[in-house]
Image (cartoon, rainbow, N blue to C red; front, side, top):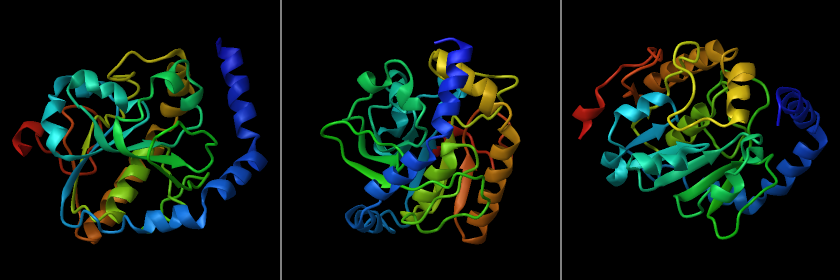
Length: 250
């Protein structure tokens, strides 16, 4: 796929508003919503780690997380190469991710205990435990406390992971591999695909301020609710929340 083909695919994806609405109606069933409600406060008072896929993860021993509650996102299953055996919760919110070469084949259904999928995605693998959540299509700064309703987006899947963690009752949330320093330290902890490089140029770099502002608002909201959120990454520009050293947490 070249750059022109990639941009055409993006435009076609954006235009599928009718199909997206139909998919949301198909997946946000009463049963799905009922199962989402069962997650409320199931981890009340516990701590969790939310992992992005930024290059700084190469500096960390992720095997330390195998006895912790973890959230991974996108191609986070590749973190197995850094010692993370599996995650408790894995989020796939970007429809374009599933169109990347090889993702459908390599995504292991046993990597995570529960997969959260964007309700707009009309795709599922056999034998995986999944729930659907609805995502707002516009960048919204209001934190969604009820995950049975549309979640806010701040141009990053990390914001949806935080909302789900909050709903589950986690009182201490640690972010890892959320560097958001695309202009100086681009790419991922793994070798980025062509499609990911294109998305970084067309979306991530331009949306960096939206991501940072969104996470700043999220930090303020969580603090007002007595929830602690920390940045445990050894690099990056996410400074709206307290930084802690990863090694001191164990």
